Amino acid sequence: MNRFDFGSDSRGLSTVTGYTLTLAITGILLTGLITGATGFVQSETELTATNQLEIAGNTLGSELGTTHGIATNPADSNQQITTTVDLPDRTAAGAYTITVTDTQIQLATVDGDVTVTEPLPAANEEINITSNGRISGGSVTIRYSGGTTIEVGATNG
Image (cartoon, rainbow, N blue to C red):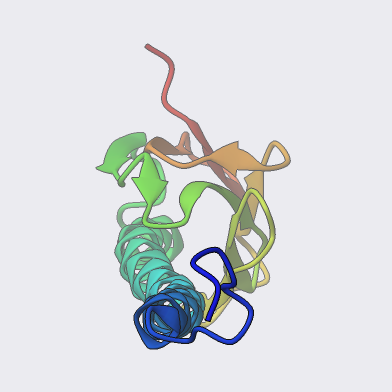
């Protein structure tokens, strides 16, 4: 055997091969774990945002229902009401917007991934509930100045 003939020598091969295979398998496993965890976190974020939007919608709906009840009561119909509802500025999924109509409150994340619709208490044809387009999440003001309209808008300042 020639001192420099390494072609038939396999003494160090199993260590290098084992090390390389171990690194490859570890890389594949870590990639799978990260991919799976990312999907799980995204799913949990959407579920949390949905719950947060439902709570915000219920809170706003409750205040609108109270104002609507006062507005439709003949004894109280001349009162002026201004109520500020403090809602969270953001959800787990980020910023959100609120749209209010006579029949429902729609809350949606800015990216549109999560949308929640909450029905309003029984609408009264004599009282309209309006908002100036989409309202950003955060403090919301409800105004009733007598008459036939309850206005919902963002709180300034």
